Structures are given as structure tokens and as C-alpha cells.
Image 1 (tube, rainbow, N blue to C red):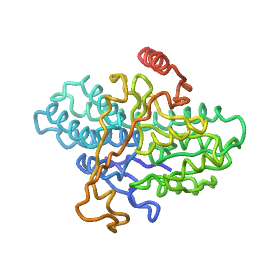
Image 2: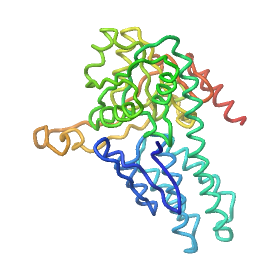
Image 3: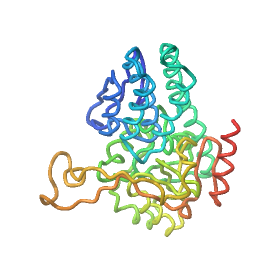
Length: 347
């Protein structure tokens, strides 16, 4: 299953706001529709957002071709795409990579070649994501030595990436190897990505899944129903602090209390090598109606004050390991991530 496809100059996205009730695809013929899809969470998950933004920049470049002032307009489009979601670093990584490709051309003379190069780079980002997820899944499955049940939070599956998934990719591979027997999925309030998306993905593949409300995770651990936790990530700092969907921090604290390993699965593109710790991560805050309504029905008093951060930050000391396409990083994370950064710089 692919959440993103490109063809005939159009980006097609699986509308994740409609799942699990209906499968609807959105055709994005211009960069504005791509930006809107990212803001609305019609496409979501850090790797998927990055790939979508890359194709959005291709659409923008095609639109401004031949109008003059190409480079300035391209930078403005890139900035508009950057502003859609402030926390997921893959968004910025993908846009920077696309602009680096564009910078090799003199746009007023080589617009056709530049646009072709941008399209090829966006396709490379998408295909690399699928390959990277495969390597993450293989490394992650090695962590499980005997059949066990795991808990996950939010959705880090094929829907959150281009094709396979990070945390759910590991679960898929471990299930194939008969190392995972069941998945407990937190519902993930307020937007229910666990209930709507993760449970749907796992059911489609025949992987046993039990849906729980977010406030049941501690009791599930207390009863020894799960033996590990695995989640995705939206941004990872140099010291190993991890930003992920709101509620992840609480799960990590509970896992620590119950002596359960807490793993994070993420590609290198999710690491932010420019920030020292999670204190430097910008946390997106979203509209109050995501909390005050459920399925279009208001469940809270009118005019009640709402705090609705989309993400939280799990400190590195609660993380047992970070599963990447280059292997599993262990504490001390600052040293492991520094080695990873040097390795990437040498490629």
C-alpha cells in the first residue's frame, strides 16, 4: 500500500482523514493543494510529509516556469511548504534537498532541465524512503528474540511513509518472522490515528491487534500483556531526545516504570543535527476543535480553554534504542548520533 503516488504531473495522496470508513484519493495538480493536504493531515507522518512536499515543489516549479524571477518564486513556494507543519524535520530535510538540486542550475536558462532534475530528485526521495524502511524493519526485527506482544502509539506505518512504515514496518517484519504475536494500539487522542489508521493497517495484513484507549497503557503493562513498546518519531535531537505524537512521553514513562524496553524507529532524515536537545524542538499547536469535538459532535462546553499540542518530547534516558537504516543506536545517544552524523557526511 502506498500513501503517495506520482504520475502524469500529478501527486495522488490517500486521504487519511477519511480512513477507516472509506478509501479516498486526492489529486494534487498544484503545490497549494499539497500544502493544504499537509496542513489538514490528509497526508501525515514525517517521511510521507517530506516526500509530499518534494513533489509539491516540483508542481510549484512547473507553475512558475517562464514567468520570470524563477529562483525567488521557487524559494517563496518552498517557504510556504515549510510553514505547513513546524515539528516534523523530514519536511525541512526534503525541501532543503530539493533546493540543493535546483541550485545546480541557472534557472532562467535551464528551466526545463531544472524541473526535470527536481522531479527525479522527488522520485528518488520517495523510492529511497521505501528502501530505508525495509532496512529499518530488518534491524528492528533482530531486537525480538522470542514471540511477544508489543504496544505502539499513533501510526508509523505505510500510511506515515511512502510504502512500508517505520515502527509498523518493524512489527510487520517481526510478525513475518513469528517474533510478534499481538500488537496493542493506543487510540491516540485527539485525532485517533491509532484507532483509525494503525488498527486498520494491521487488520488488513492479518496481524492480531487489540485497540486500547490511551489511558489504558499503564494497566496493560502492569498486567504484563506487552513486553516492548515501539513508536515512530518526527524529530530527534543530537542528544537522543525524541519528538513524536502527543502521548508518546507518557507511554515512555510507563514503560520505564514497568521495566519494558521503549524503542523508536526512524530514518536518518528524522534526525535534526542542528539542535542539541528536545528543548530546541518547536512543538506544533493545533486548533481547539480537535479536542472539543469528536466525529463532528461537540463533547466539551462552549468557550472552554484548550491546550492542544500535536507532539511531545521523550527524553533520551527513557529510550532503549533508536532503530535506523544503519542499525540500532544505543546510549550514550549523543556519541552514537555523532558517529551517525559523521557516517552520513562521508557518504
